[in-house]
Image (cartoon, rainbow, N blue to C red; front, side):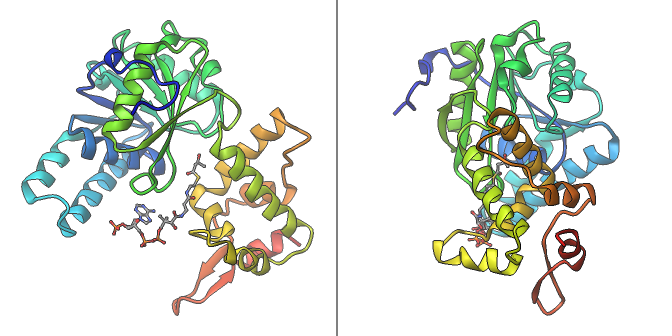
Length: 303
Ligand code: 3HC
C-alpha cells in the first residue's frame, strides 16, 4: 500500500549508486544501511582523509558484526565491504543516482554541500538531506535543479528504528519523491510523507518532551529524579540517555530552530547552551562497576 500522499510508484527512477556526504555518526550508519539493503556501490565523502577512513572503517566493522551474528555469509560480507568506498572528492559521485547528506546541521553548510554535489551529478540524481529540523525548500532554493531535493530524515540508531520521514520541498517533483519512497521501501523503512515544517513531525514532539524535562532540571529537579520519574512511562531509554544518543549539540540546534519558529511554544535552556559550549556530550557517566552517576562537571554547570 502506498503511503498517503506519495506519488505514483511508476515515476521512481532506479538507483544503482549512492553517495553519502559526511562520515560522522549518522552518515556512516546511513552508508551501512544503504549498502546492506540496496547492495549497490556506496561512496562516502568528508572533509579530511581521517574522517573518511573512520566512516568506511565503521561500515566494515558493522558488516563484520553482522557476519559474527550469522546475518550475512562470509561471501556476502566481502561483497558488501567491497561496495563501500571513501573519497575526498565529490567527483566520485559522478554516476550516482541518489546522494544523501548528513553533515553539520547548519543551512549554509548544507546549501554549500548540495551546490558542490550538483557540479558532479546528473540533473536526475536525487539529493536527499537527513536534516533534523531545517527547511528542505530553503536548502534547495539556490540549486540549478531544486526539484530533485527531498528530506530523508532517519532516527538513531538507524539500523534499528523503522521510521523514515520523507519531506517534500515546495519545488520537489513527483519523480524525485517517488524515487525517495522506492528507496525508503528498499531500505525496509516505514515511510511517512511529512510537511516541510520546522523539525517536521517527530523532532517537534521530541524537542518539546526533552525541553520540558530539561526545564524541570533548570528549575531545580535533580537529573536523577527527572530520569527516574519517567520510568513508569515505559520509554525505551530515559530522557537524559536519549539526549546523549541524539547528541546535545543537535538537540540544542533543533530547540533553537523551534524557538525561532514558535517562540511562544519552545524555549532554549541557558544551561543546555553552557553544557554544549563546554563540549559535554552526556549527563550520565558509568563507573567500572557499571554504577550510573551524574557527571560532576555537568552537575556543576547546572548550579
Ligand atoms: N547502533 C546500532 N545498533 C544498535 C544500537 C546502536 N546505537 N543500539 C542498539 N542497537 C541494536 C543492537 O545491536 C540490537 O540488535 P540485534 O537485535 O541485532 O542484536 C538491537 O538494537 C536491540 O538492542 P538492545 O537489546 O541492546 O537494546 P534495547 O532493546 O534497549 O534497544 C534501542 C536499544 C533500540 C536504542 C532503544 O533503547 C530505543 O529505541 N531507544 C530510543 C531511541 C530513540 O528514540 N531514537 C530517536 C532519537 S531522535 C533522532 O534520531 C532524530 C534526530 O534528528 C535528532
